[in-house]
Amino acid sequence: MPFSPTGHNPVNIICIAGPTASGKSARAVEEALARDGEIISVDSRQVYRGLDIGTEKMPADERRGVPHHLIDIRNVAETYSAGDFVNDACRLIPEIVARGKLPILVGGTHFYFDALLHGLPAGVDANPELREKLELLPTEELFARIREQDPRRAAELDPQNRRRLIRALEIIAANGTVPPRARDIRCPDMHSETRTSDVLTFAPEWIVIDPPAEELRARIGARLARAFERGLIEEVRRVREAAGDARLNELGLEYKIVGEFLSSSAKATEDAARLERKLFPILSAKLWQYARRQKAWLRKLGHPMS
Image: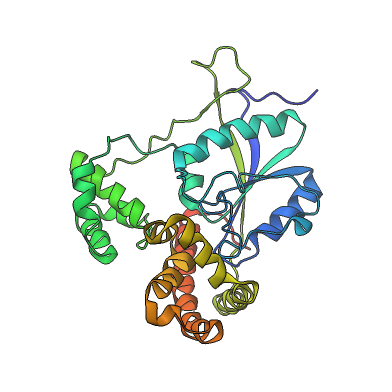
């Protein structure tokens, strides 16, 4: 009989984390095949249909028959939050366990891991007037304000993610700081008839992939070159036409930077090869900065790195 999780029996899950281009997705497939698992994507951008090249979605044939969840579940113009991820993961994990399979969570959106395992930040209502003012500020200024007013929260944030920076400033304006997440928040137990008392808790096994710096830089460069060959610029054009420049900024990194080039009429008319030559060093530097921030988060976990 499949194990039915309850608050008295923590659910065994595997959490695979690592910086961009470290090989997380391939490792997850290996673990799933070896340990009879199903994969849950922990990636804030792979949830969107049409974001294939920039997010390095694993092609179906490379998944080797392993079920993958939370990929291609939203249109790009829609939003998907950490709260949405927690709700979806809390639904999927018991379903996977009930099938006698092992849930394997893999991805680079570390805030989603935190939200699932440690709870979401305390809620604060939206402040449209404040948001309108903050939208006018450069990203660097938004991050500088958070660093000044709440250094603890600043250390947890991606300095280039405008949506989260603005949300943090919104919470700071209401509370003075962003409150730490409550450590006793857990998913409702989907199998319990007494859901008010039983909750779904987890016993995570961490697999942390942390390649040496030079190896990782080379992998980032190779991955970026492959993305250009596969048509990254054309993918960004399609997303821009469907959702606009503001949405590209929210999607971050490749989409934001390529979108900024495409929004310039002079650069947009350049042939693809010349545009790629200009974009490659800019994007590779930004991706390396992003990877370093991810590595810093991974070190805080305190788990052995491989």
